[in-house]
Image 1: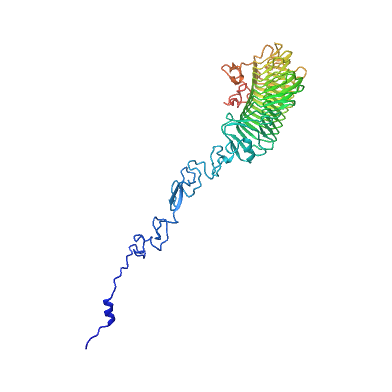
Image 2: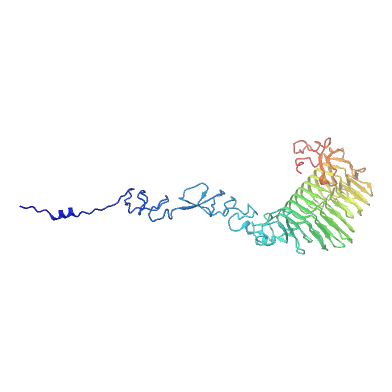
Length: 577
């Protein structure tokens, strides 16, 4: 019997194909033909793109949509430079941050959190808001300071570049800072003729309203030609207020340099000089404070020079008066420290009164410390207190005071009184003072080269040196140190731990010498130097051999804790000049 083989087996053996199924070297279940990288299991058509430098999903792009751009932070302020991107996988890298918000990566003070109010007037866009210095630059953003101040609001800072600006600025109730970036000598506010005060604060501005770094000049107005303040409390810093005038007016002049009424303003590190009060009223010209006038206020003055301000009268004046060519204080309570009042003059024509060439204090309280009043003059027909005049129910305290080289009278002066200090109707506490080298001279009468006491005056002298003063009536010595009014004498005068020396041939007029009572001595100050023509150059420190050392009030110590010296350099603030 023949065997017959199954057909299907023969067919299977004879027609079997040859197929290459490929390799999967990385074990990701994709063959080398399907995989774009058969050596990386994380790279295949089914993978999700991750940040690893590979084309994970095999679409021909590497790390698409997963790389994070970070930005170089070269200045270390945590804000990145948009022009310096760095591709990262989101990790933290030193010197690289996740934002691109910096507008200047070379300056750490410039970034979105920068403060234009703290880093002021530097010409930079500190807060990256697109405007440098808040957008209040003069002249870059506004042509004149008044335009910028008018646009600004509380807290804004107006930055004024050096230059001269013919302009008048009214703060208008906004607590704005007006800053001269180059300082007072380089940044000039020149008043517009006929437009009133150069700078005005009269809309209840607070201490946050600031003007700093300007020369204020060219104002011409009866009241506050330079700076006018009423019912406001601004801050005035680093100013030169000069060559302002009150002229061509038949009314009175008040505070030509600065007039402040009902104000607690602050003035510091400033000069008020060369301002002139000149009322043209031919019959009754009255002028108050060519430099500064303070009325019904509580201001603070620190480190201020008030110099060479003048009250003049017209040639045909019949009767009038000038009060405080340097500073006039009325019904106020100022705090005055380290202030020099020098070279201020009341000049006369006709029958006029001149009171307080340097300082006039009327119906006021006040604290005056380390104040120098020198080289002032009252040259009126009736001249009083070329240095200081204190009048009308004051209770004033002066500590570490110098009143020196002041001249009351001269020329056509008939009567001259109290060149260093004149007190009437007032209480004055004077502690650690030098009243030195003052002169009162009149053709009919003079008295009190150092000090003159009038009706109802109560002065207390403690640790005071009254030295080398002189009074001359028609050339005859007449109360060089001190004089009292014979018709209306002072009510009470008290001297203790003080010294009188070298006050001419007749040192006391209508009063008894206090030497020998209450530890008052006739001492020898031996000041280090009083040789200069101007007392601003004098050194009133006590020299070797001075008998005023350590003999002052035992209840008062010097800065070195020794017993106080007599004079302005004694006491705890005797070295605070």
